[in-house]
Image 1 (cartoon, rainbow, N blue to C red):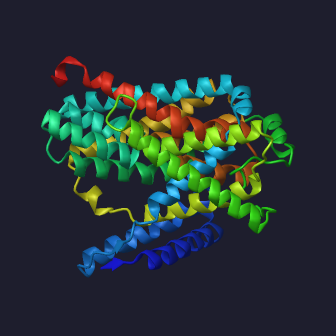
Image 2 (image 1 turned 30 degrees about the horizontal axis):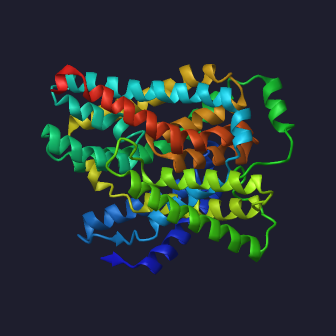
Length: 400
């Protein structure tokens, strides 16, 4: 049974409302700061799975608008990226990127080591490593074709989809509990300083806040997003098949950065309230749609070695956030938010990381530096670094 595009949009909206109510009603979800799209989306995904098992009916939601929603979200990140602000957060960004890069290396190293220990193809270790967990469904699907065509790994695409699905779920679930654990390690002075932070917020920092804007500002924002989408598609086509090939969403974000800073030079001001409003709506709809469309039965098809690798990767992510990222980023509240974000980046995707941060800051307080560096790290730099690291691992002797 296929649900049409309009009915899918209605269902997605209802999923978001359901998620909001679940977080309000269920104390455990509030306690561990589970994002509303994750709570609602997983309920629907489980319902679809049960329908498949009990009634032998496969429910498929139309995915037509899912990709445009994701691209629109990344466009708003670019339209908010001021080079002067990024320069100010440069040292913190470099440190966080180094930590993210370290996790990418560890994910592949742990995956390959476990693959050897379990007696399976070491390519499965990389596929269950940074390719699908930090890379997500898109990167996993792209590299799985390479693994099949060049390395002869059968069912690579199906395994990649299953691993990425596992990661997306765990990335949205793990961030809140990790943040709660780390909040207990903050000093009383640090907790007090969080409560006393200025009321001024950055874009995406308070998704539930009312945004003062006008119809003209919304129309202008939609026009700018459309330019980013069209320009990003053109750039992605230009560099396709070259050494500079990048996912379309990265190109879209890059166009947004250029557009925002060129307009700033001409003293043309983009209404950030409108950008925040459209960006948060696109993020919430995309994440809810992505989660409710998860084929959870793909996880059931993963062999025991792959499941073992994924469980180990989840444990690695938790330990890395608590014992490496938290101390390295300063053992403060910003470090807590960054750890929650890294759970989304390391197991899910950039939208999951943003949703994790929003869930934390909506409850405990603002973290400007996290919202400054995570979107650019996750949506731009991490993909570049991940591609390089994957290629370096594939150059190891035992893959030839």
